[in-house]
Length: 335
Image (tube, rainbow, N blue to C red; front, side, top):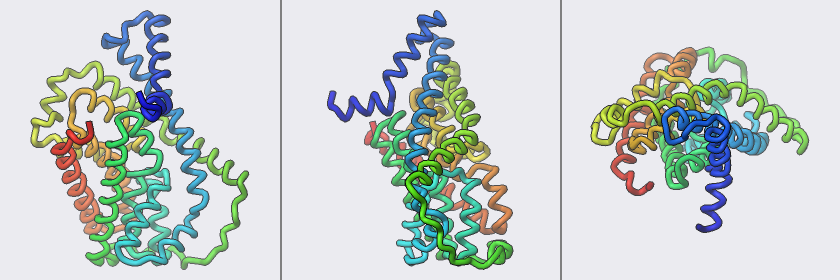
């Protein structure tokens, strides 16, 4: 075993934690982890602890980086670029914001009001909840680096292409007038943060985000444990197996009404892959939950008109379906 593989297994996959939890379940609880109940308890305890450890470390690191990009500075940076380069930068900056889709919308309003092109703001809106730096390591901790990097890449591509298409359609008139009239953009010299300020900001972000997502993580891990140990393989294969031509469509449709972020969907994705569901189907589910959750669509409806909302949702859904079926067809590359 190479040093990289060992570090990946111990630091990201936390095999040491899995072994400790297995000892706890078998020696203290007196349960067999190869059976349903013991396996479910092991899955739940191990995944909850692992996700919260990784989440705290990663959000702290990402937030420290993000402290260098306050909204005003981000707006200035984006304003220097035009065309697809602006969309690409908008999508990349979205990866630096560890926000869910709902909390990204106020920034979307601010960017639009500040005069940034609509396509660039939509590239940011798609990318921000869909992909972040933390998702790379979290995905690698559960799957592998090929899948993690591929997910991030296709997420950024979807954000760039989706935002570019919306910009080319010139749909500015379908944004609610109050977004433009919410106040004139004012040039503000943002006080430079000290190293201590940045550390405090990162710590506060960890606390705030964990408070916001802890329940979704517990629910996601609970669902993952049920899928992993209790739902018969035949049912999962019939509904979401690669032999079902509609599996990607079903996974996308199931994901849209849910409200969570990538941290809450990962345990479910982990369990689905372990039960033989295609990687494209799983990624489609994750993308639908994070980018097109019903609550975020309701909130977005308050700032854009129905036509623009439907076009936005249609573009993202089409992109998710294409990505899902492509990954299923090329799944052998990610084993």
